[in-house]
Amino acid sequence: MNYKENLKNALTGQTVERKPFVSVTQLGTIDAMNHYGLKWPDAHKDANQMATLASSLYELAGLECARLPFCLTVEAEALGCDVNLGSNERVPEVEISPFEYADDIEATDDFTKRGRIPVVLEAIDILKEKYEELPIIVGITGPFTLTGHLLGIENLVRYMKTDIEEVEIAVENCVDVSMDYIEEIQNHGADVICVNEPTASPELIAPDDFKSLIKPNLEDLADYIEVLKVLHICGSTQPIIKDMATCGFDGISVEEAVDIPQAQKEIIEDNCVILGNISTSKTLLSGNSDEVKGDVKKAIDDGIDILAPSCGIAPNTPLDNIKAAISERNEYFNL
Amino acid sequence: MSYKDLEDKITQDKIAIRYNVVAEGAAMKAEDYPEVKEILPTEEPFRKIALEILYEDKINALKDVKKSLEEGYSPIELINNALMKGIDAVSTLYTKGVYFLPDLMLAGDAMMESVKECEKVLGRKSDTKGTVVCFVAEGDPHDIGKNLILMFLRAGGFEAIDLGRDVAAQRVVEAVKEYDPLFMTGTALMTTTMTAFPKVVEALKEAGLEVPAIGCGGGAVRKDYVETMDMTVYGVEAYHTPKLADAILTDNKNWEDLRKEYSDIVGEFVSEYAS
Image (cartoon, rainbow over all chains, first blue to last red; front, side, top):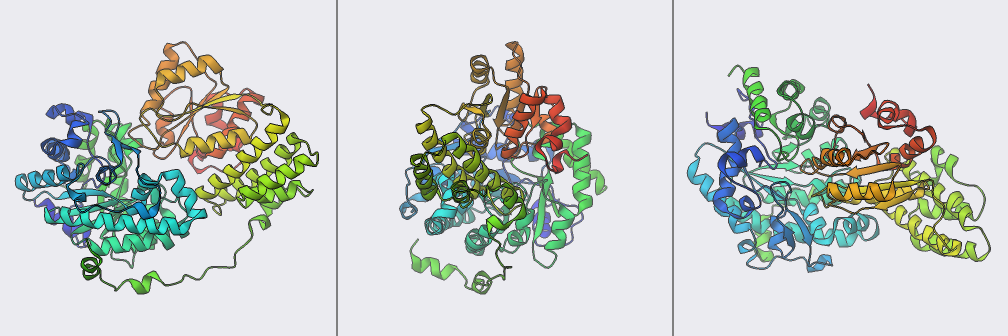
């Protein structure tokens, strides 16, 4: 089976014999790390470990992709933020940002050689060398989320009402920063770029603001990405589904709070497929294998185009639940 | 990348979509929603101040609160009849989907600053109904949710103890010993950090401590997950917190009651609790 072809066909809206099962979001788990003798934060910093963990769920459970990195702090760190890389139990987080104003945000010429960007790029090379038919999915931080890292999320939310111009400038500058990174990711041969934009969720930002401020920037970004592209936004994204689907991405990734049949109806005219929405908390993390299977079956019946966890996989997620999820997909398609 | 390089790479064919203006219906003023009308005071200066909170106008709210205090209005009356009414109206519009998080935060800023002004005159913190302890799960630095909870609890007349973010289970145990709270809230944004909640429950049990309920909520947190633990109740919205605390305080409800009667207690339809 050529998983790369199958994913490409599914993302471009062609009929596929089996719906791909991938993760466009974080997929490092403790079970997999134990299996390979890896641990965080090392696997965030070492290209070999990153590559091994990125493909671990393919090797151990049959997930049909490699996905890296395992955090949303790579860009912020390369821009000069202090990042706490955490441990096995905690994911990396931005601690201190040197930026106070939107105008300060600018990538240095050597931006893509800083922080862990070279690690991510090298890990892509390693995966590329090792797997011919396995799609490599690289997650990047969306411009609005990156703005939140750089200016502080609470400031950003307040600015949305008090100083929208500051936000506009900051987000545009973050788009410029992302473009340099995207170019390198593409040069290294990634198959899919997933733009993670959790901060743009309607739980934080009014849907009208998404449309007027964030969407134009995501359009620019989507336009710039030459490989397959997916937009992931967490939370209840029902009110912005139509806008998400018309940013120019091949697919949008949503979580279980979204009603899939309703969403498919809304975007029927758009060239965009829906990925998701196997609950990472309710079933994958804390459910048993029957509950996981039920979730997978429901997602397929609801008309999901590509199966994927609804959000970043929790590190404590049992490997058996991921296996159960994929075996349910296999049974469904008589594989 | 220079602009010249960039320009060559960006195609212009989406410009037309971007600047399309979507026709919107006539805007309704926040104060004209019937639910808001019911809440807002009619008497001045309370009405004016409540409206300033509703319109997230910190500068004028502070100005008018100071002026009213100078004119001899009681700080308690200003808190209860103006500031709290204003924030009640804000949460009502949030429930309706008219207001969003930025509105909650800015109105919250205006209210909290104004309350401080009143408390200066009062010479002490205003009397509280009881103590609630609030923390963000260990490993999680996202505290917008917790800060909103603090704001709503204080607006609801509770003493809200802020343990901050990234709080270890042991610290929560110490806080329970120190404050003996009637209610506790734990928030987590991520699936990666909500696994700290069971550790808190375990640590409390080990220490032989009990709280009537721990409200768990936040981004990735789901009701089913929360209900795998004892002592907890899934909190859906930040502004539900004072209502849950009230139910514990006045009706002696415990976590099991809160789970069963959630919608009734918060006084609205909550889809997560609809069976």
